[in-house]
Image 1 (spheres, one colour):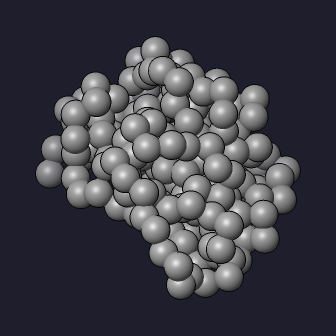
Image 2 (tube, one colour):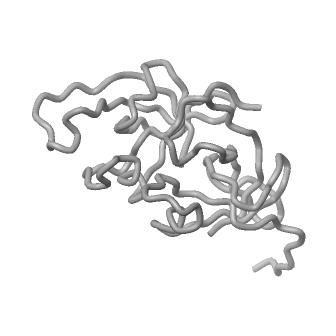
Image 3 (spheres, chains in turn cyan, yellow):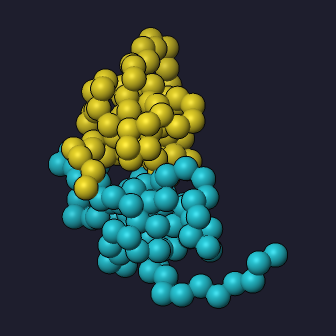
Length: 91
Length: 87
């Protein structure tokens, strides 16, 4: 799992059946202080995130099938939490 | 999962049976602004949703197998979404 910020929404009409009715976002992995950490990624929303939100992205293989009740779900990144606050100590 | 631009098609006469009816493309990962990032990869397109020049979402690792009806293809990158636009 990793922290990320929601950047843009992917608008699409032609897609795999498993993506029907789901919101897909471009996300930027971030450090706890908000700076960028690595390159952008794409994730499917499961909690109602919006653009600008800091989120937790995760999902093990097979989990998307389970949560969306699908036979086949080619989904690797799931947005599983919207972050309100992070408490951390610099190491 | 990543954003990518299709920069070419991979032709192969000899391939595993599960990929027989499935086109394969060269995909250059791009940022949401369209800039290139990282190295190109080969991705399968089991649902025939993309053409060269299109921007797509590619699912990588073990979940790529799930894009196939039978979920038995030996792939680790599949095209699953054709991007119309980002907003």
